[in-house]
Length: 372
Image (cartoon, rainbow, N blue to C red; front, side, top):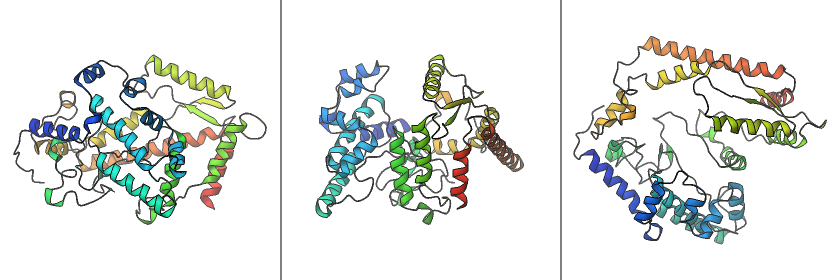
């Protein structure tokens, strides 16, 4: 791939980009120099600290669970504009005190929210199950008119380095050329359930052959909830949960281990079974995974850096030092090792179903649903 000549110092380009992101934040949401200085000394920017800079309506909205927000939008207790405004304000404040976003779509979000409110008024129904719910996107989605940089200065003004005349032409599509993990995150299980249910209702397997055609299976949810509610009574088998105290790679800090112990005690007190999870060595998985990440000898990373002339940050110089790509046969061998590890892990998982307090009835339910 031909790397375009650098026409502007990378520091200038990066600085201009940061300024443009801050430039979309309305003046009424801008923090003072003293606010920023105080934030720089804070160890915890969440909760009470960030709420100092938010109005009460915003705090009330953004601290609600996903399910509550969706319900309020569906019942029109909240408008899409109210919700979008609240999350835009919170995002704007968070960006100023923590530089956590690559882009902020304030105008686009409010414009879309107005469209949604107008639709609801005219049709007396929402556009769909997630009507008006704000979401954030991993910076691997093309959004029309917005840069997709993943932090590379050389990708400013385009989408993942795609040449300028072809950029910003695709709207809200996952970058097919970049096959990596894009999943869902939420502040609650209810939020994940609502989102997964909504996504699966659109039958994505009809549009992407890589998606397994498995619809939302409420039967499994009901079985699990029943087991949660009944605890250790004779009505149902309690849940069996495994706890991984140490992955063999990183030793958890004492507060983390103490937190795990608190969770284990709470689960056991609720009548469920907790066992130590001792799977095949995670060091094997890490070695194979990292080998794949550096299979090209870091050449792609350096190619993208040369687009702007920016250097590697000091913390990454050793890891991303240029080296020869691994040979094809070595890559193939790593693939086979990964498949062997997957099978070993799967065998271990299945072996746990023979113990006392097993999750056998749940496994049977899964198998019956899969085969039916």
